[in-house]
Image (cartoon, rainbow, N blue to C red; front, side, top):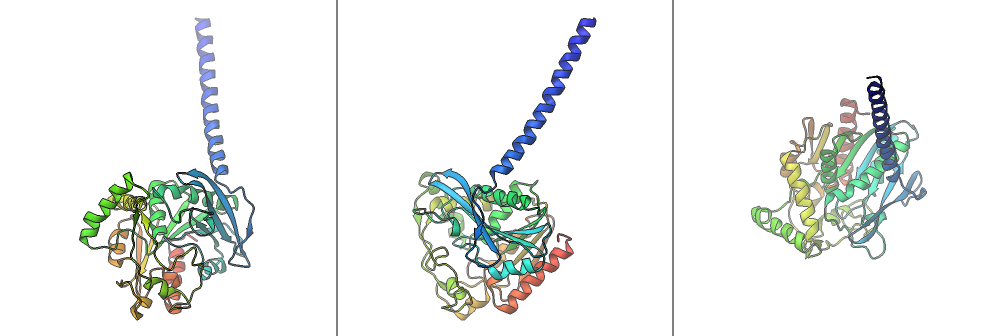
Length: 355
């Protein structure tokens, strides 16, 4: 009996030690995973000028070869532990300096990601904007969040524009335990801006082709009206790198169409996002390939009714703000409209006790 009791005691001791070691290994594994997400490259001055820094993040290899993302930051002079992480849209990159300055001047540290195969992250010979599953971008977001944590920022709002809005919502839907405390959506790409035939027949067909022929090229037309509404040399106020944000639409891969539709369909079935959401969009949309004066006061890319219809169901706490006269990228609208956008953002963040 004594020997049996001693043996039982030893077994229990071994079991406890094993359990402790197992938990310790989990903690170590999580720490290593977070560390792996941090960039190995050093910070460099960014193209946006004084106060802006950037660094590359090696994201390994995918079906096209080596890939990387880029983290850009502007720290607030106030210091502190508050920060926003911005995710750009399709045919886009982070260049909205005025937006970042607004956050930094409001004592909120600003971070942005140029996703793999976009903007600063493009490498020689790479196929721009290529993706087969929007979850590929989750590692880019994780790396930026890990960097923010390493910088002492523990109160984080995620902000996404257009396709970046879809990616951000999808990310939070799939990662409910993320450290993100709020979601800001600037004209998110929650549905295709097409007629019934295109939505019900053509897009699903392109998606099916994307499974079999991922590199099949699909035309987006030749409309330049939206780009003309932005660029200073046409009708807008802004200058940006047109090698990174193309003036003429390029063809997209069938796999890109499939990736977008897959994420949209999952969002529509129930995103269940737990954090407060600010949903912003213009008050109207405008159609057409060629610029007209109306392009300066409306969303020329998406149907704002779709944004409203789907966006209101993303979570239990959704605040919808309609921006009168807003462009597709609301922060690139005319000065009075931009002021309205920033007033909404900062008052909402205060109201929700995020910052």
